Image 1: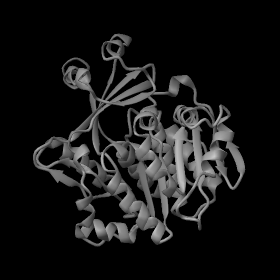
Image 2: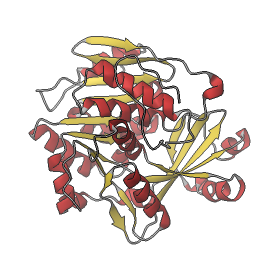
Image 3: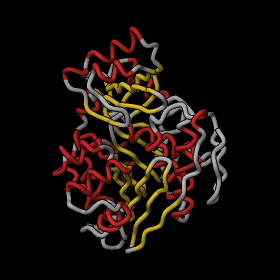
Length: 352
């Protein structure tokens, strides 16, 4: 295997999405709401087999960070070999092999930790009227260990990369691993990006998030995550003001100003830094073109990062994020064409 010389590294929970269109009865049965993402409890475990037996699911490579890294590489087009991803999968199961094959086809170098005793994680993606509810059964993904970062290939990837992205979901798995990468980024003045990921991360893993946030040069979140964070930290109701306040929170790397990016679905995207808020309009998508919103936020981050690693202006980063999200919500899950048609600039709209 040739040496990694790319720019962007992600670390997170690699999951195989089991995606099905379902009725309200299924959502009610498993006590989940649309536009939510949760970790599976005992009561949720039968859902995976039920989808397989009754709902003809699609199997799609997933996991929030891995999706973002795949999209970023896809958006980079002919700039091959720029991305790498680390996470934990089962050592001897088809799901893990399927994830590795998918990532490789998308041009992402994966360096998985492989667990001999636990199967690859899965995520039930319940789709209704274009909206989604996600129930993640982390399984092997939950067993990532900091020791994997000491392997020669991991060290090679970490040292080569100039940008690091980790979704908040990983805070439930290995804060130590996240901090190892984040501290390296600060020491070398590299860029570290974090995502709030889901309200439950803020509500139930607040201490872990508090350890990670000072290292974030970029912080991503959607409106429900931003509102939850604001409520927990008494930051008010105005998301533009919330973004400014989060941008000014204590930071480890004083050489970089924090940039906070809050998406709001079809409403404008908020970007705050250096005491200034900018809003970027989202081109509306006709309802009849919407397939499902699963992966929209991951795609936004992937598109954004694909331009950030090329030192493009923030406006172009946001536009690429909008383009990628618009593309993905017209697909079932994070499924990518052989080649991205994105051409760059600050006003392009995806017509997928």
